Each structure stands twice: as C-alpha cells, then as structure tokens.
Image (cartoon, rainbow, N blue to C red; front, side, top):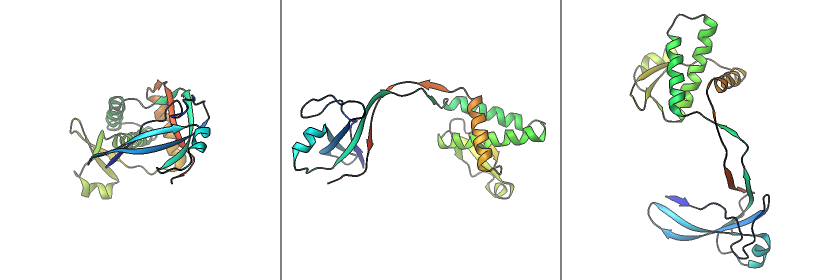
Length: 193
C-alpha cells in the first residue's frame, strides 16, 4: 500500500500568506480515500500564526522548511545507453593486449560501471558460470535489453582507489546539467500527534 502526499503548497491554507524562502511551515494530512492500492490524502500547509491559533490537532502533522529557489547546476548522470556503451568499450579494450597498469585501470573502471548499471537495472546478475566465478573473483551480468552476458572481474580496492576511479569516470562520461525550480519539504523531526 502506498501513501500519496502532495508537495508543499506556496501559501497558507487559512490566510493565504505566501511562504518565503527559509520560512517554517506546518503541514498536516487528512485521509481522503482508502483503496487497496493507494492511500490518498489532502495536504494542508499553514504559516506559524495560523497554526498556533488553530488549537487542537487531530491529524498527523510535521514542521518543514519552505524553499523556493533554483537548484544550483548539479551534474546529472548520463543516460544508461551512454554508460552501457562506455562499459562495452572498456570490456572490449580489456580483452586486448594492454600493459598491466592500464589493464588494472580498465578492470576497475569496468567493475565500477557494472555496479552503476546494476543499480540502474540495466545489468542483472546472472547465474551462468557461478561455480567458476566463486573461485575466480568474477561476476556474470546479463544486459536487461539485449540478454548479452558479460564477465566482470572483481578487483581488490581500497577507499582511496574507489574515489580516484569514480572521479576518473566522471571526467570521462559526458554529464548533463539540469536546472529547475524546487519546492521541497525538509522535516525537522517527527512531530506526530
């Protein structure tokens, strides 16, 4: 069962005061419809003045911080197809005769990209070769779109190496910037009644 709660409103439900950036707002919900799949609610947001004058609170409520400003340009991950293409290229390069230092770098970056693609559900863990993989430090993945099977070596890494290679991958992959207006609710802690 899922709860459907709308985003914070831009003004007080009672006095229609327009919320300012950084202003604390009190929010509450009232159940509207209880179906088998989703619990719908009606959200009401109040300024501090109206909230304190309201008195008795029968429904769950919380205090949140109103923000209405544009996000700083945050890099977004490239699309899965781009990452998948880069992953395939690294696998192909790894099968060629390359120096040991480059081979290790290629192996680590392939592994980190495989984890990223697994998290994004583009690569799925595969049962094929499982017995052999246990003693050979290998993972087998299946492409969720093409059903291609990939064998990825699991390298031994320390935290410093992981950070280094994550930065290297970020520098190599084309990231997209996205800018949008944001209204979000940040809870200060559960003030449920």
